[in-house]
Image (cartoon, rainbow, N blue to C red; front, side):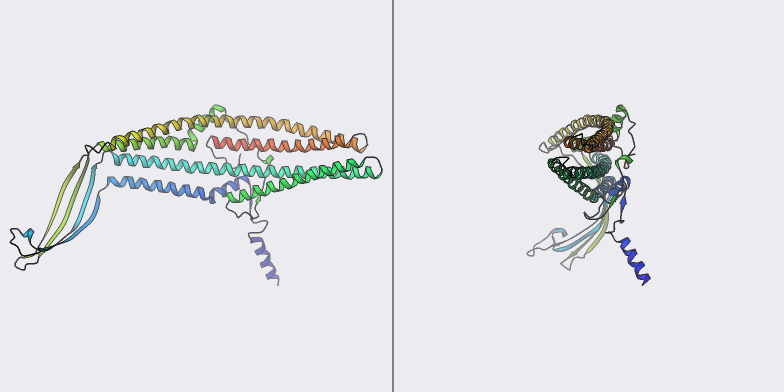
Length: 435
């Protein structure tokens, strides 16, 4: 019986629905998301495909070896006088192997190899971009969850204060020291505070469901996301010039744009290669057999080899090569303009992120001062009300201002850390734990 109880307890602890099934800090949550997210895995597979395409492009520098064979039947409809064995009814077989090598293809093979190498860089940058986007999304959602929890704590504290106010007002009414309107006003404020509780709990649940999605858990999986907004004490030491320089050299989307321009110009060179000749070398090692229907003639078989060089040059193709080259050149120029615009946008993103951080830091200082003042004001209003000197309106107003001040303080802290998360995204650097 004792063994059975131990086994049941172990199963309960290991069961996925257990409250202790999983617990994640911000850094652990980011690491888990990077490991299981399908988008990241998809980008990795596309990157591997691009690497394989390099081998495909390089293969055109190597010879092609193929097996060849043919069989044909020649039948004359009626007996006629023939002057060559080639005109006689017969069956022929040809079999052997052939080697071909492209000696010159208008630099198309070289350009294709260089293009495939650039495409690897593009896909690698896209993979890094997907990682950055996922990291930032998890961080922002995690911070939203922590902020919602602090808002819930503020709302619960507000409910407790209002309940005490309500009890005091009811006591005053019972001894005819205050009008019944004070009770009604407190009940209205209590209802509003309870509504805020409901909204905060819903915000928390929505944030948890979204985080579960990022981390590959079912929506209803019980996962613990541990931490507080005060736990993240990291600061940004970049100057504006350093941040912009880092962004221009590190941001994956800029690398994608830059490499895409290079790929487009390789396409221009490939299109220009259509104006150049093609030179191929070939070698055949064959066996030829022929059987005559007329038994007066002996069948024969011969083995032979043949080597040669083929030269082709499309002198005129209806203008397709010209128009294709012009089209590819215009596409490359358009991508170049997009790259320049992306560079300007990156500078703007970095500057805005730094401005948001500076503003949030100032807000943190002012909101903390506001919370201290609001608490002192509420304590004074409560004392005046309890001594029947102050009014219920003053007390309710002080309570509302205290709740708003506490909510503003958590909002400023969340805004600062969110601005830091976006800053690291905008300079193209990973910082999973916001350290």
